[in-house]
Image 1 (cartoon, each protein chain N blue to C red):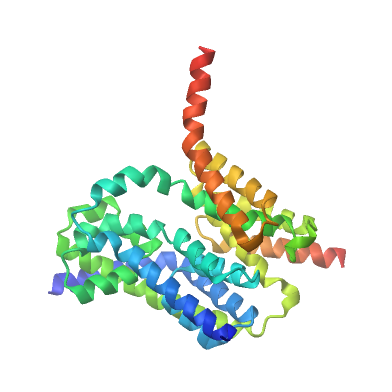
Image 2: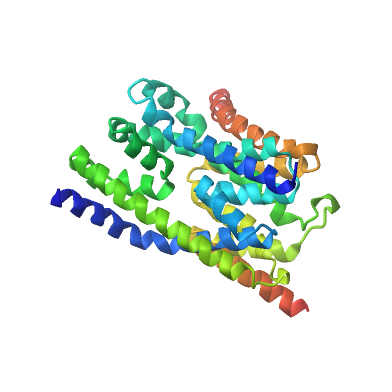
Length: 235
Length: 110
């Protein structure tokens, strides 16, 4: 038991450096929600229900544009699709747990949890040690996130609109975009999707957004094959 | 139906959907590994496509988007954010740098 508790605190400690990224993001999420005119209770409820910062920022942007609820829901789901990858990664570890632990840890699954708990060093531990480590990372991040959103809400009400705080949303997405582009193919996907989003932005009900994402992914699927064919015909 | 109630319904729907996505493979443990392996190449294309579609129009044009007013200060701020994001893994510093650039440009131009 003592060893497991040690793993829990080890996980909590390993998360600490990542707080410098998560806490300010949480504050942006809290402050932006208030700046859009939502009540603090509502922003907190939204934060607790989502526990997903990028989906929450996207939902803000679409709520601001008066997009239909179904589009907002679909967009948030698509953004959160990456959690399915994390779910598959941790399925062997969390699947056998009793329901209450399985559901709780699944609800709190995050990018940071994925990053820390899929490190090569973790693979040498026993399953029980890994679960306790994961719980330490996950719970610490959850608390940090909630507290930083509360701070953001407290600050947000005092920030004048002329500061254009809402521009932090596209900037945050841009920063995330830069870090997701790890290959030339992904860069092309982003360029296609971004240009289509500009071209289609006047389409009704945010269908332009979905069309742009589809065009980007379609391009990403088709381009490698097309380029290979062209190279083959040059030879 | 009031706006607030609609938003709460939306939040609950997103919360439930997100939880189900997170739970999906953990719950199906043992029966779906092959499917995720096959769709992995599409799943990696989604993040850049989604993020680009979300941020590029909002960066180039000022709101309301219907006016197609290109905002050069926002473009400059975005360039600063891209440069910082190349060196920093966190989301915080690119956003901070971009905002400082935007505020500085607006302050100078009055």
